[in-house]
Amino acid sequence: QVQLVESGGGLVQPGGSLRLSCAASGSIFSFNAMGWYRQAPGKQRESVAAITSGGSTNYADSVKGRFTISRDNAKNTVYLQMNSLKPEDTAVYYCAARNYGSIRYGYWGQGTQVTVSS
Image (cartoon, rainbow, N blue to C red; front, top):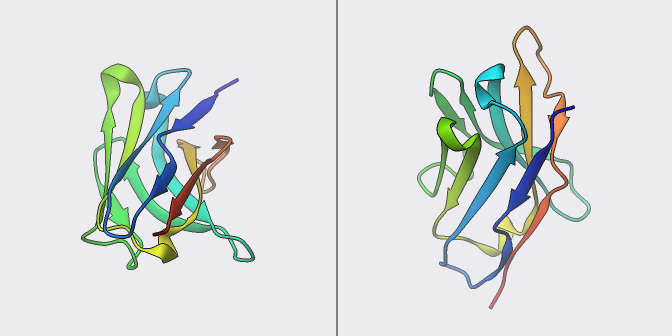
């Protein structure tokens, strides 16, 4: 069973930066794509960023230019660098993985809290 473990969340002031990490228990090459989602209190979970096995990336409009998703295949880890953080970025951030041939993300981490507040 694949396990995804997020880390790197915390409390940061507006304008600050955080880097989230998602460590997979197996090779991330086995996944077609990996992504980051977030869910704020009272809101639906939303996609933040994704990266394919080939390195293609896409981002939600709300984070374009501020967040960067990357992967380190040797470490089986995906990162989310978050800069210029805003209070509206406050949420629980989840890492997810999608198998080849699947349209849904089938594996999820436990989430890490990001709070942007002064």
